[in-house]
Structures are given as C-alpha cells and as structure tokens.
Amino acid sequence: MALKRQSDELNKPSSAFDNKLRPTDFDGFVGQDKIRDRLMLAVEAAKARGESLDHVLFSGPPGLGKTTLSYILGEAMGVNVKTTSGPVITKPGDLAGLLTTLEPGDIVFVDEIHRMAKTVEEYLYSAMEDYAIDIMIDQGPNARSVRLELPRFTLVGATTRIGLIAAPLRARFGLVNRLDYYEPDKLSEIVRRSAVKLGVDIDDDCALEIARRSRGTPRIANNLLRRVRDYAQVRAGNFITGDVARESLGLLEIDPNGLDDMDRRILETICVKFSGGPVGLSTIAVSVGEESDTIEEAYEPFLIMEGYLERTPKGRVATRKAFSLLGLSPSGRQGELGI
Image 1 (cartoon, one colour):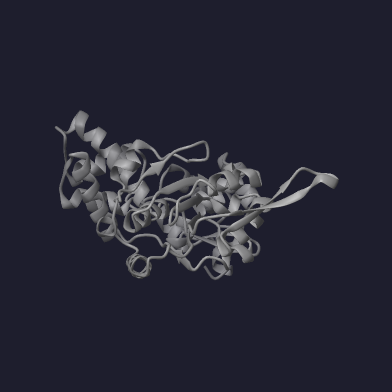
Image 2: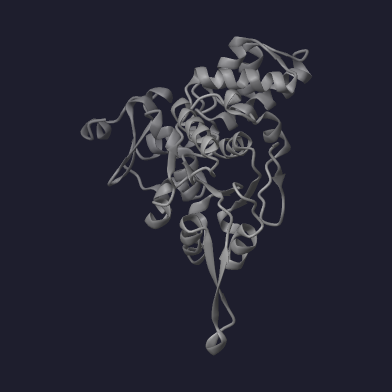
C-alpha cells in the first residue's frame, strides 16, 4: 500500500524542495546506520506478526532526518502517515479529532513533541498504552467522562530537546533514537544523490566541498547545493566543479570550516572584545545583535562540537582553536584558564 500523506488543519507541510530530495525508503537513506538497522529490524518483526509498529521517538539537532525517517517508516509499514506538531495541538479535543480518524496501523508523526501542552500530553498516556482516551463532556454537575476506543496506531515523535519531554511520556516510547551529526563522506554521498534528483552535474570535489561546509547536517547540505546550483547556472555554464563550489560558497560567506558570518562574529566578540572569556550568553547576544536563544540553540552546538567554544560555569570561553582561526594569539587570561 502506497504511503498516503494526508493533510488537514493539524498537518505541518514541508517545502517542495525538501520533499523532492527526501528519500522514500531505507535504501535511499544515507547515514545513521545503527538507527536505520534497528528500525528495519523493528519493521520486519512487526509486519511478520501482523502488528502495528511500536511507538518511536527521534531526538537530535534539526535537519538530520527525523521527519524523513518517519515517512520512511510509513512507507515500509504500508500505512498512512498523519503529521502535526506539538504547538498546534492546544486542546484535548484537537488530539481526539486526530486520533479518532486513524485506521489500524497508521502512524501519527508529531514534530517538536516537547512543545505539546501538558494537558494534551497527559491524554497521550492512555492513548499510547491502552489505545483509548477519556474525554470530559460538559462541566459542573453535568460533567461526565466518555471513553473513546482507538485503533492500534504508532506515535512517532521528533524533538530537538529531549530533556523537555516529561518522563512518563518518554517511557512510553519503545524505540528511542538519537540522530547524530554526519561525517563529510556521508554528506558528500547525500549531495551527489540530491544532485541527480535535481538534474545537476557535479564532480566529487564539489560534493565534498559542500559537505565540509554543511555543519554535519543534510538539510544544510541540500540548501547549499541549491545555492551552488544557482551560481553555476548563471556564471559557470551549469556545471559545478570544486572551484565553482568554493566561489559560490565564498559569496555566501561560508568558510571552509562551515562557519558563517554570525559564527565568526560570535567568536570575534569573545576573543577580541572580552579577551577570550569567560563571558555571559546575554552579553554575547547584545554584542552581536542576536537573541540569546538563537545563539544557544542554532550556533553554539556546532561551535562547541568543532572545538571553538566551551561552556563553563562562569560563561563562554573561546579555545585556542578559535584564536587560531581568527589569526589571533590567546591572551594571558586564556593561559590562566588553561585553554
């Protein structure tokens, strides 16, 4: 049975570009090998028993394939996938309306599940365990509880902040998977596959150049490929080589290490204005003109992962690698901190 992506008021649509490049089966999904093997095993076992797949939770930074894997699960199981997001479901009635329209075995994909309202989250407990929900009708003396039986379904949740998911909800997921950043060789393979789907000719040097600057994230790699394609179409005869990729990515101010303008501004602020730190997040935010939450969630993880930045109890501290990147020498203050 072909995968049917039903859309309604609760659905969270993806861009046409992402849908075009998104793999539809496990064979086309590159990377996350251990997670892919576990999911393939779970699907094969569930189909052999004629049961629905156990509830699945994906966690990890954005752009690594959580949504893609959810749709692949639906395709592999031969069931419908209904998509929604945590902030959209604000009332228990919204959840009941979604779950009561399911067919046996269907998958409900909830993106950013950690942002779901607590009152709604509590209704999920019985839905996931007993496949039934109790809805209160009326108020006061006329209030009564109505139990709605549900078909056996699979809840697939995706979150970028697993620590914000309540323990009772997290414990009800049978398969918990954390997606990690990709290595350049895997990203290079993704870029080559995406180029084929886009009808773009690229060489291996170009694919690797884009992969190196993609911050370990397939979504960023595909977006950079699209930007490089535009540059090649206008200025390079529509054929992308490594040199063309370097020129176009330089135009986007993305350096060979994958750092963009804001990354460098953050590092320059810490290294130059505050002698390498420690300096508080709010101070950095004011200095670079960006929100604290954006810096903490969008920029810091990559800078820390690559060894440019450290979080300490006193604040953010730039490493020797950050000073070297900027062509600076660590200050005496850095030496005192042992950096």
